[in-house]
Image (cartoon, rainbow, N blue to C red; front, side, top):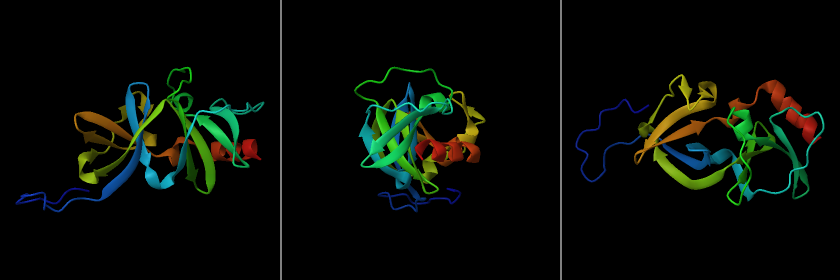
Length: 167
């Protein structure tokens, strides 16, 4: 991962690392990103139907073109303080291990293409979030971008609970 020496970097011809394509979003003052390949769509916040006895991190379910999708409040899942939803709130719909899940985020920023060489392994705790969920931290134009692995955010047991909620 970026251990090659790049000599003679004239005109940007130096050998670069793998290009990461990401969707970036915000939770509070932190900027996060996920691999664009798992993102199916990004929707404005809509009414979420509460599900009795659902785990705390599950906000509820929505009907997305005839398919029932469980919705996870990412702030809650990451132990961040709650915030009222507003016009910027979005639901990022992703597919993880054949499961379709929506994650509520404060806002979606942009689609990014970054060179893997500008990322570093995460420190043990970033922004108070367990580093097990974080694949890397990118340094981009003076800002830090926290790359999340949404597949690790939920345990196998929690993923099963999501299937039960959406059934």
